[in-house]
Length: 162
Image 1 (cartoon, helix red, strand yellow):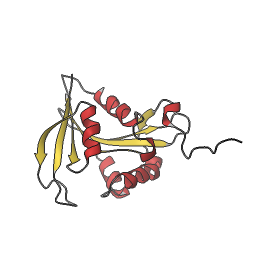
Image 2: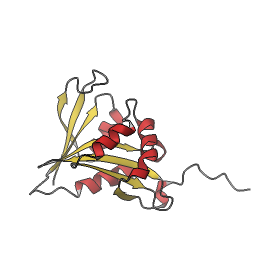
Image 3: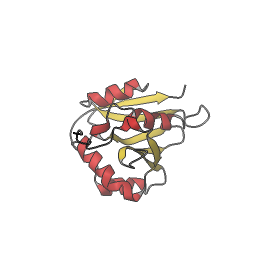
């Protein structure tokens, strides 16, 4: 008798593939978003952001199945990259997906142009704080009443080019 097949193929069986986000990724991205955040972005918010010239969306997909495992939206500034939204599918967390996406973004840093990555993390999101700290980010300030949906504070975190 064979054991039942898992709902999702383990991400560790194949190297994650990171590519630009396209329109047909939106249903899977939205499913990850609503599963990850209490105050999730809507499809309209994603599309509005991605229509801006300075905003870039990336997805990490399973090399074999094509399933979206995580995504990142970031904004280009003159001297920095700013992560606006970042999530990994809950079934694939702690398998290197987030680390691979951050490494891909960090590879875009240089001392001559964009030398740091910035992002805000909710004060109550300890998992995200610990993840980004493990990636080399440091909290550089506390932003009071940062979020419009709640009166919650945020930590401004930064990763500098090394």
